[in-house]
Amino acid sequence: MTIEKVKKRSGKTEKFSRHKLLKSIHMSMHRIGIDDKHLEEKITDGVIKHLKHRRVADAENIRSAVCFVLRKNKHHNVCDFYSLVWLHAKPVKIRNVIKRSGRKEKFSPEKLFKSIQKSFKSSHIHDGLLLESVTREIIYKLGKRYKGKEVETEDIRNFAEYVLKKRKLGNVAKHYIMHRYM
Picture 1 (cartoon, rainbow, N blue to C red):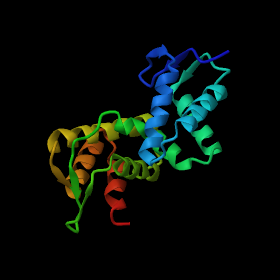
Picture 2: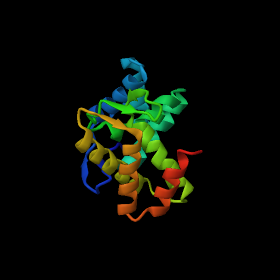
Picture 3: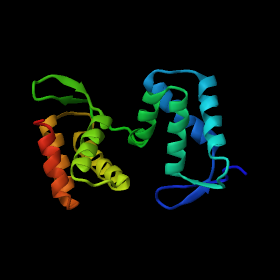
Picture 4: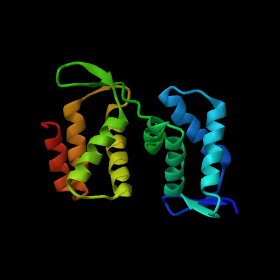
């Protein structure tokens, strides 16, 4: 038996594509600075082998299998990036973040995600789909407002707090605000 279909997070089912899997693994490895086509093929084949007993695999099964194979091949940092690959599906056009010190750095969706994730954990909420949805909304709103511009960290905090409270996640918002003082 082999994977025939993939069930997306939206509930939609589509035909499994080895090419799509290989492309997402390539993107993650490239982002980390590894350009090795042979290794990408080996990881892709390992994932397919790991999931061989499933006709239908959901997105989480695939993500877990990719990370399992990457870790087995001692590429933990690629797994970390692969787990967040959805953040880069629609690149944000924010130029830079202006830190409280006045220093500028490149906008990092990963940093925003990880700080929101810490706040969810501190609030004892373990809902990955909600976490992803909230993060996407914050990034969307920031991208819409600051496209091609620089954004101050305080504005990012305000957008995050607004979205969290709007979603009735006041406790998460409280932890998010507190994290910057820790």
